[in-house]
Image 1 (cartoon, rainbow, N blue to C red):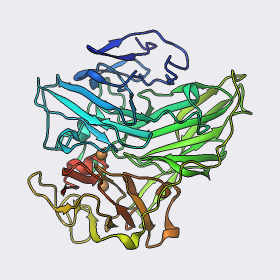
Image 2 (cartoon, rainbow, N blue to C red):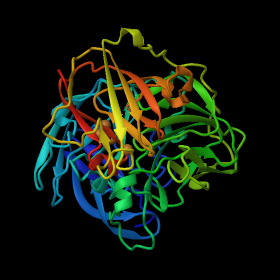
Image 3 (tube, rainbow, N blue to C red):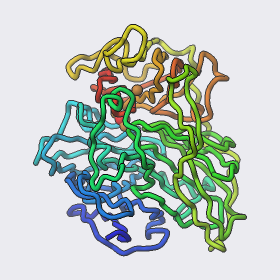
Image 4 (cartoon, protein in one colour):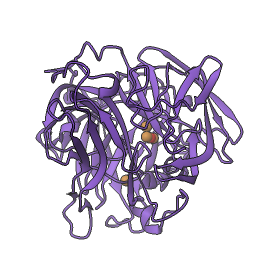
Amino acid sequence: MTSRREFLKFGVSGLGLAAAGCGGGSGSNGAPAAGVPVSSPAPVGATLRVAPGSADIGAGELPGALLYNGAWPSPTLRLQRGAPVDFTVANDLSEATNVHWHGLFVPWEVDGHPSVVIAPGASKRHQFVVTNRAGTYWYHPHPHGATARQAYLGLGGLLIVDDGSDPARGLPTGSSDVLLVLADKRLGGLSQLSYAPTATDLAEGLIGDTLLCNGRQGLRVPVEPVWTRLRLLNASNARILNPAFADGRTFWLIGTDGGLMDAPVALTSVMLSPGERVELLVDLAHDGGQQLRIVSQPFALGTTPGMGYAQTAPLDVLLLDVAQVAAGPSGTLPAAFEPINRYQSAAAVTERRFQLTSGMSMGAMGSGPQINGLSYDPNRVDFQVPVASLERWLFANMSPMPHPMHIHATQFQVLTRGGTAGGRVPTDLGWKDTVLLGPLETVEIAVRFDGNPGRYVLHCHNLEHEDGGMMSNFEVV
Ligand code: C2O
Ligand code: CU
Ligand code: CU
């Protein structure tokens, strides 16, 4: 069971799980295995079944998990840009759930709004057309008040949108396109997976003691000595990561939440908060036969002593096992990708401000995390945004805690951080749906909703904060 790789197949008549022993680095369809079950082809007429199960983190089975189609980790869904999606989510849990397509532009009825849920035993059909840019998105549950627990227990996987042009862009594919889902758990010697947040966890977010990569502890990924693409999702409830190579080598940031950037940016580490994705390119051409460690390097956010957020020691993420020789050419670093049309902030018609507070903010003691002094009320709509109108939104973090802020139904652009365009971090330069605000930091974005009128949410993607009320309803009209 431990070494079994689960390979997910979508068929016309339904979704079946085949326990195919496809050991080795890559699945057929050019998809990397790396511990992530892979789907193929597009999910039309298929069923995604949500049910209890067990987690195999590489050290025996842990009961208490929640799974999509019986798979730990959750299957990767591959969608074609422009293609229709039509499949059913069947809820075999004893509680309500739903599925949110994080980063995708979908009608609000199938977006996984916190109050649009699938009752136990019921199922729901999801139909939409994929209009997003090619990129790395994800799906996870979003029922009001239960998102943190359901996601923590295992529900959440990658959604890869493909437009068929990556080979033409000079980007690695197949086993050199490595998909990595990072999520921490608090195992502490437990023989089962359980979500048991303390009062401190509820205030600050639950930080685990074990970082899993693709659901495994100590994951080793076989790669070739060529230019390699790494796609990382931080699916942790609250842990912020700072991925880097242990040897300090340079890599290139090529993509953010909404797909490719306009050009690669050289980095040696990259901050990745819950909900965010990055795509990286790294040159492994001279590393044949080596093992390369990827870690999360120590960092500190916020300056108030005893407050803020820090990772004080390096944290192991995974090991890349580089083969001795490459089967093909080693590739190169593309000079540029498609240009990003930058919003002109002066063209924004409306300005909105969002003040972020936590129970620890001045004057907000004990209120829990809030947006503009309000806790989430599923029945209250906080504002309306006209379709296709460019807006400027200012997030001001008044609290000593970091908050990764996420907006449904859009990809936005970061205009300023800390009041200046120059204060932006590298990931701010691509399309974003989730942006990290450090303690007392401000971030200004330009945002537009180009279709799909309806009710959506924005919220902190620290899932304990989200469930604790740091969320707001808005309507696209
Ligand atoms: Cu990934 Cu509303 O969430
Ligand atoms: Cu989302
Ligand atoms: Cu938060």
